[in-house]
Image (cartoon, rainbow over the protein chains, first blue to last red):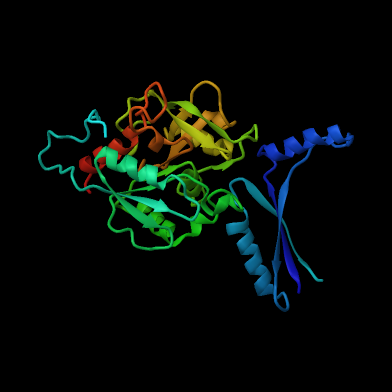
Length: 83
Length: 250
């Protein structure tokens, strides 16, 4: 069944304490090439049948109203993944 | 119960009837502090009315407290799922109506109010990433709201702070507006315990009927059971709203 993938990230100007903690842990494991880390969320909405334009529009609306909080987050990607 | 409760209401005006104030306390799946909040309501002299998140009947309450906890396990974002509860739609309508229902959001309740857009900004994880529980010194920045009128402006109070997602954030324009409109209700005094912008602990809406804060006034209402120094600072939140109700038209 096809899935609609929605990616949500904290807005660039919002400090990401979790990303900072991960960035601090990486060098301890020998990963020294990464300047910064920002952590986001990935949602997978499974659709039974074809992903129509209407269903995709619903996914976009859900992404803006429930899956993200526009005060602190941006929806950075909405795409269809076929299995 | 202590008999040393502060005086509440304006007793000089005979038409103002204090008795019979009904304050709703909302319970969601995962709410923890609803019983303490109801107890605080009763200690202040009002009747506590239990409101279930899935119901749509406000039961004619005069004010509402949205208590703390971890509604829906803080899944997705703290308060994000509770915000769409049927009871929240009723509360939002009543808070924005001409009647301006007083609403107090405590901790997770504050997060639900920001997710509902009844209050600006949002909370993200504490900057140090740890759950924190401590007696917290606050400054009352605005004593003109429905829930703070019993405090002196600038008064310092101590109540319990306990949370993981307590860092208040909003864009600079919103923060400037909050300051200009005197809508920062409470600030952290001294060490900023979670990295909140401008040390904000609580804010109000424009009308002053909706107030949210991260620390917990309902845990500081009785001598011997709240923070050691001045254990009853939290009770003033609940007596303030009664004063507001008898002074107002409701």
